[in-house]
Image (cartoon, rainbow, N blue to C red; front, side, top):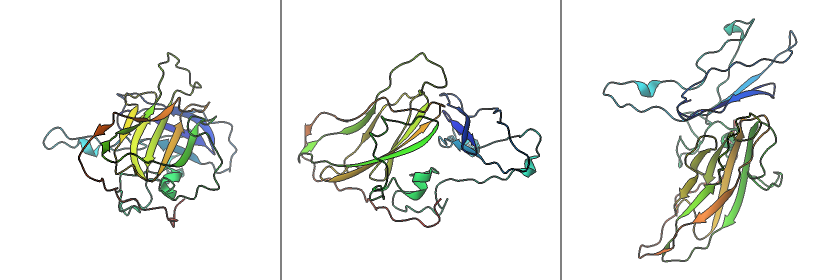
Length: 267
């Protein structure tokens, strides 16, 4: 998955474990003990991997950018590899990606991303009310949160805005303390940050005017991936304003913000 990658695995929806990652780790080996299984029963193994991007080439003629991502090898005791069928789920449409405005790298393979729920106008009215990612989830898995709010910033001023995550230092290394989680941040449909709590070091994510609508409605969405069995919650999250600088620059035009439409073929 690249430097600081992580992964989690489930068997028929039952959590088996994770590799939370660390800064220098580009891959890992992980062995899971399966619960009692019954002969003749179909089981589904789900593996979620964080693709941290491809390597760069520093040498002429190098091929490090071709180092693969994903499951590099696997084995299941008592079974041949040919008995196991895999399905790969990435961004919806692959190279024929749906969001032609924000581009192919803007979204990945999470259910909410494939459905387009990170986009303004997503059908969130039926979603459960929540305090958001600071409320968190009680077990390993992925939750998705969204909110809408207005900004009315004064004209003639440059006022930078950043999302800032709280991150307290802890010596705990237990697998149930909720320290291992990853967050992706979307602002008006644009992915504008990936926060890895157990690695860091970045915890402030600036979002410029034009991605933020400084004079109207804004849609912010976040995915929370808890890699520990006991779940996780974001320790704290604030939208912080920097110094207000009076400026002579003109009106900032917002980036194109196509809204949500139902995506055929999404699962």
